Image (cartoon, rainbow, N blue to C red; front, side, top):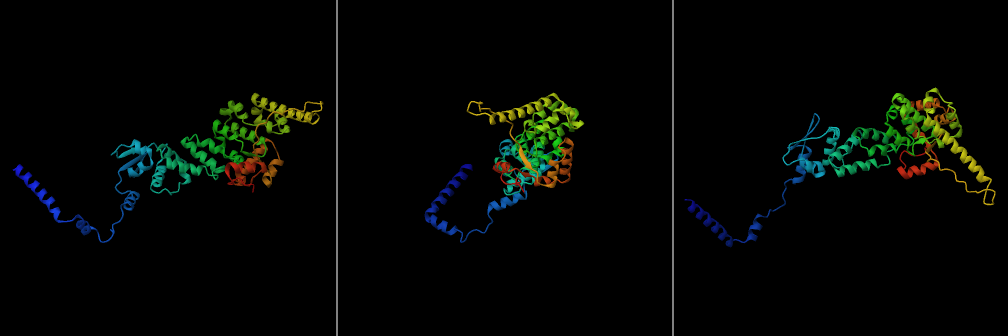
Length: 380
């Protein structure tokens, strides 16, 4: 029976092939060519709609107690993590919430479906953290395009710094601290400033572009940080005082610090051996410069003097603010003690936007425009 069946199939095949000699293939092609283009909807928009509406999802992403239904294929197109770490047929993926918060992942997935989706400022740094963990080069580049903007300076930069702190993005934190200029003194008036770590404080006070009226502002800001938690920070006086550029202070102020004519609150800091040494060294440097300047004036190549006195190199100048408002003029002309500084900080607290009226010295304006553009660095 089986042999008979096979013979019948062979005969049928031969018969069918034999029939083709009676018909031209072009006739078949002409007969079955559609008279008009198909009106059927194209495939990709339909697939895109189903993906956007999350129909027939094939992957569950677990982040803490949040369950997010997704399609794996779009994730694999933009994420090396999903491309390399997720196995074929794997239905569930668990992600660490401290690196990929659920709200950030939702934004990331929406961005995959719509590249023009805005990255909300509330979750911006968490989106960057998620993109780095999920290894998404295109989204990382998009985030850094925002961060490289000249608009991310001053108070905005400090906001980004605080967000980056939560995710321990060590590259981003110091970068943002170095973008604070006119906002510096207003920042010093906040608890967030006093809660900086020593490393973070060192980056901030070590910056050349923090805007101050005088270097004593930096000294008082350093004291503000130390006194905020004196019992835990009193052993850090030497490290913190080395951040202050005493050589850039007026001789009168240095002399006042040298004989401890300052409020009782600062005495433990001013009487510290490291502070005394720095103040004495700065006074000696200033006196030496004056003597060298006088010697250079009275000597020359005629043999009465060498004429080649070279003053020691001073620390780099900070960005200087020019007092030209009622508040800043009163601050500069008023009490230059630590108490006067704290009174000015109180003014800054009561008027949060006043720092935007601070005017930079003309020399500094060009420097900062080269670094950050015109955003938030205008002289008003």
